[in-house]
Image 1 (cartoon, one colour):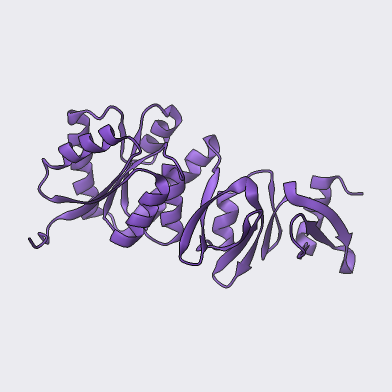
Image 2 (cartoon, helix red, strand yellow):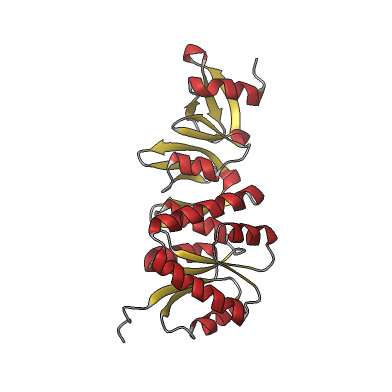
Length: 260
């Protein structure tokens, strides 16, 4: 049967089968929504969403491989802005962030009345908001959540594979055109992130933008070499690349490392 042109495509991502079944049951009450896929972990959700391009995604926050927030960050990095309804069991900080930025969310167990309210808001937003508004709201939400829950994994590429990498395995990132290559303790990966996006995601005390083209994890710093014009180069563990420190970043590095 051909798809009704007025239908909106939906993906459900939740690692609990009963939760997926309940969401499917509730979705069936709305003929304007077409379920096009399911996922039981964040990485599978990211892969299927990038292939199927649903307009709406019900995304659980706590999932294996990648969390719902990390999955949403992957969408942003790939310039894909679906309408996301986050599903959560108990994250009070998340609920506050959703309410603050008017992002839809559902608390588990899913209640029919609450689901009906969410569907109403989905239809309103599908008709009223453009991709720029969706991008802005999702960015605001992720920033709020990061303040309470630091990102622990990001998705990188190795050939045609999407690989979730723990952020504490990242040694450094190097700007390469409009994206970044990322050296990790598991090898070299490519990414869809621009440097400023990666710096924002990895905004912890462990990471330092030592040059406009390099973001380093100070936990992997082995030694500091004096270089030209009173600047430095950094020797990182597990790799031979010497990372330059720009003149603008030299003073901050000296403070971080208590260099005299």
